[in-house]
Amino acid sequence: MIVSKLELIDLYIKKGYSVSQISRGLGCSENTINYWIKKFDIPKRNISDAMYKRHNPNGDPFKFSYPVTIEKAKLLGIGLGLYWGEGNKVDKNSIRLGNTDPKLIKKFIDFLVNICKITPEKLRFGLQIFSDTDPKHALEYWINAIDFPRKHFLPTVVVSPARGEGSYRKKSMYGVLTVYFHNKKLKSLLMDMLN
Image 1 (cartoon, rainbow, N blue to C red):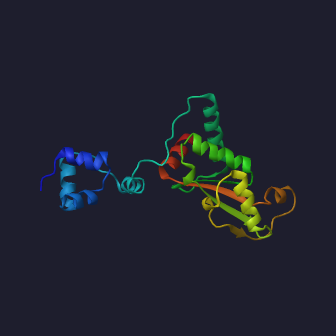
Image 2 (image 1 turned 180 degrees about the horizontal axis):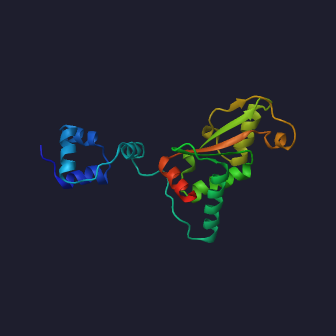
Image 3 (image 1 turned 45 degrees about the vertical axis):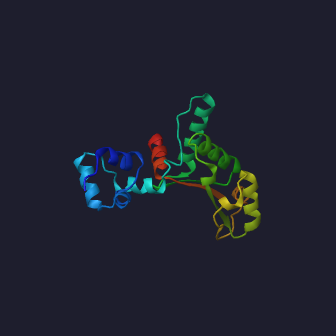
């Protein structure tokens, strides 16, 4: 079977279909599609890019753009600073930032939504509390503090032992809230900016 270059560019590059999707649609083998991709010198996606494309068929779930106003530039700086100081940099696939301060959490959400252009609907939150904290009370506190519905919250995790004495006991009375956004490309972009 002969497949035209224009057809392959349309299906594989522009529409982002996988080799298996194209082969099923055209009624031929994957080997045939791979042959024509190679023959026409069409750049082949690696497995990671192919999986990313499959899980994000409408493109990136974020639209990062460099700020054009002083206020947005400040927010970019604050967001990167917060992530550098409080974020999890080990996980290659997601952005995570945890803290006990709702103002800090809200500012990081502001950065994700207004600089990275993440749809708030895609954010998730994990609450970790100590064994002497009431889970329902802590969850209600965070729902109200950051103004997100309960459906965005993962199950609360209780850790032992109870909180220590002193000022940390007061700061952690509602637990640690972690903001989650799972996206390898945005994580890589943020890490490149920090480096």
